[in-house]
Picture 1 (cartoon, rainbow, N blue to C red):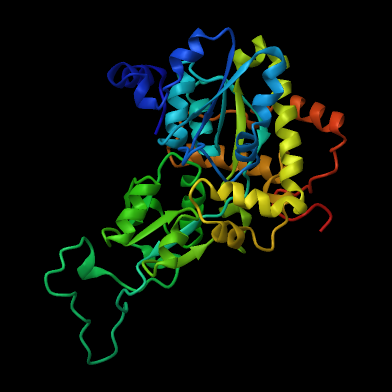
Picture 2: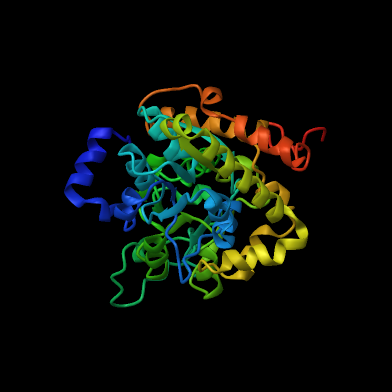
Length: 387
């Protein structure tokens, strides 16, 4: 999806602010000063919860809100079911000051001319999973035997042509869901390319999380490239995990960040610094192994079971996944994503990633809190510095 300001305005005019999930917009406009943070996730439960990052912990603990209370600045969190593309629309029309989202949607928006800067990493190296039906029939029957027929009366899409997928390469020609325009999109394309496939070799359906989980469970698709949510269906025996990026190259993982609009940074640099200070303190607390249990259980409030967070994070230090720094690995991932977005015709034009990443606020916060060397540094290839 290539974002245009005119297109975003047309969609807003047609659907109104409510279509973007902005129930607090009127209150934000009436307040003396409201700092508005867009989150590329729907919030779940009461109180509303999100997961998978230090920003999710900051929201759960109320630590960013507390940082602004002395000055009477209200922090408003706005959650978007439409993920990164929906956040882009709100940014384009000036309804957000900050955003927590993945790399691809931010790249698409920046390429289209949206003036933003990346100020903090959060929720990096998130794994991707591929789920397929668990009881599909063999690809090549033994000599002299005919393939088993699907059950009488079966009308599910793909039921008569489902095969046993053993590798990612076996997805060729299959009906596969992929949430386009999110930070799932590019690592999925990288993974397909590494297995000799292009997007055109699959029958891609653009489904969000709820959509692909339902389609997998009802056998209406042959596979889904998604997140940890696929483990829910695995535990019910409805899905077999064909692939997980855990243990594979980190180039197949997803990256996320916090960005600020140039206009807000110019008008309120002190607020940007205060938000980064609170986010770094949260990242430090969240990265402490003594807090692992509480971190995972706070994330579980957003709907993904604690056991799945524990499985996904097993064997990995929290300091790796909850690192706020743009180290050489993360910078390389964003540069690669920017180049691939243009190559795959997902973005309009090229731009300079180095000029987009603004670490001034982060470096000031790390110095002030004495955390310059707290998080590990990784090289562009994903290996630890000095390894």
